Length: 242
Ligand SMILES: Nc1cc(-c2cccs2)n[nH]1
Image (cartoon, rainbow, N blue to C red):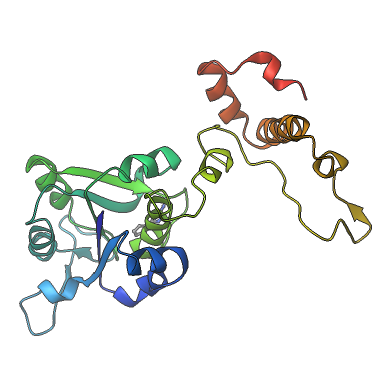
């Protein structure tokens, strides 16, 4: 997969050189390129924004500069344009799974009051998939942090990026559709707190059952909406024996 991220603060994306995503890039599992939007400006001041038509506070990012950048970056084939915005549809694990199947993602990091609406409109009309996505109901100063979140969530789903793909099933919001059970490691007693006996029993069926029960318990308590979704998908009732 190729991922292009365009920003007026490309250094904000330096975190993608580190850890899991950084290693995946070095290993050639992910072709990730970060670009400075101002490289596509034509004026001396490298202008990327202007005042909003219709008035109002702040500045809007120009469509012509974004058009130059996105045209260049999508010249090799169909790409999925991702525009982080607080007014977008909610980015979830399902969204990450869908994006992870794409050949190319282009993240357009908006600043100021946003990107001229014609950019998304133009690329939809040109046949590109365009997703305006929110990572939550709060407002950031720009799309860079949201892009970091989404790129990490997508990259870790790519083949070979994480060591044990089985762990993707049982993690929160994974294929099981539940929040993750509580985990423990050495020492067996810490701050006068012991590890649940079942986890020391070596009885794998009981451990599996205990973990499922704790995952169902936690999900019911914290995210009843996820339980409702599971019910709708046919969660076996006795499966809730906790
Ligand atoms: N979820 C979310 C996205 C954003 C922004 C994206 C671009 C500018 S602000 N804020 N909150």
